[in-house]
Each structure stands twice: as structure tokens, then as C-alpha cells.
Amino acid sequence: MSAVKRACAALYWLPSLILLTDLYTLKQVSGRSMQPTLNPDSSLLWRDIAIFEGLLTHYYGRYRRGDIVAFKSPDNAKYQLVKRITAVEGDTVRTLPPYPDSEVVVPEGHIWVEGDAFHSQDSNLFGPVPLALVNSRLVYLIWPFRRFGSSTSPANRGVHPRVTPAGGKIKSRMF
Image (cartoon, rainbow, N blue to C red; front, top):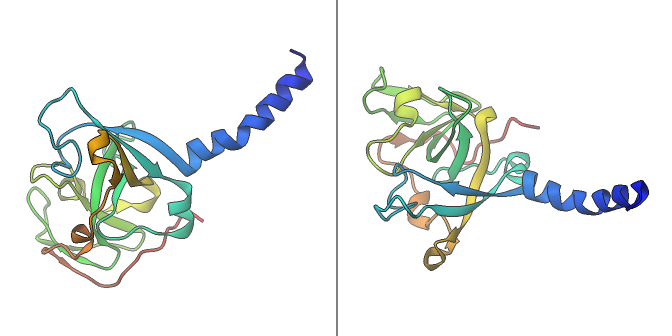
């Protein structure tokens, strides 16, 4: 194949690669911190696979309470964590141990995340998460197929009992 044909083939596939890497990505979710929403079975052999929306969520600033997001761990950027947003900037959260303060107001440009399971490495451990660490929002479960569909039920869109809301949606600081 000539160099020109290879270059044309690369240009042909470039939009697909951008779509798959920046707009939507498939992620395998492991661990028990989001049970029963994700990985509800106790078997470690099965892991949920989900579609996460990346760039569009950042661009339109559509992070809301109840969204499940993927972000770089504030403690170690090599690791990705998946948690639910329980509070947005301006909200007041009554924290759980080991967080040092009994209440915290989520600062501008941050979110408060918690696992659905009680014992989870979440904001109660590392505090509010900067939006700059958030890279995507879960939009659909695709595996196991019996649970295929939207990831967030309307029941999870409400205000968490330990959160006093200050506003509604939050804006992304990416653009």
C-alpha cells in the first residue's frame, strides 16, 4: 500500500477514533463500592461494562446529583474511580468518618462523590473532587445484557439525606 493510501485510510478512520476516545468510551467497572447499582452479584468473575460519555458532558456541563462519574483518584492519579455525585458546588454535606469535619460546603468547581455501598473510598475519605479530575459520566450499562439500559434511575436523582442543596446543575470548568 502506498504512503498516500495509508494516509487516506488513517484520515478516513480518524473521526471514528475521536468519537470512541473523546465522546464515548467503554469501561469495565470492577469492585463493590457501587453495589447494588453496578456489579450487584457477589461473583468476582463478572464485571459490568458501561458506556461513558466524556467530552460532551464536559462541554455542556451536565453533571448533576445522582450521576455516576469516572474520575482520577485524588490520592493516586494512576487509578480511575467510579462513584455517584451526591452533592455539587455550594451544597452542604454532613460527612461520615473518616472525614475530619462534620460538615463541608462543596467548593466551586468541585463535586462530592460517594459509593452506593456503605464502605467505599469516596469523598468521605479524600474530600470534594475537583471537576478537572472528572473525565466521564456513565450513560448506559451494556453488560450483563439482562441489565442493559440507562444507569441512573429517577429515584437516584433526588437530594441525598445528608445534603442541603444550594442549587441545581453545576457548570464544567473545562472550557
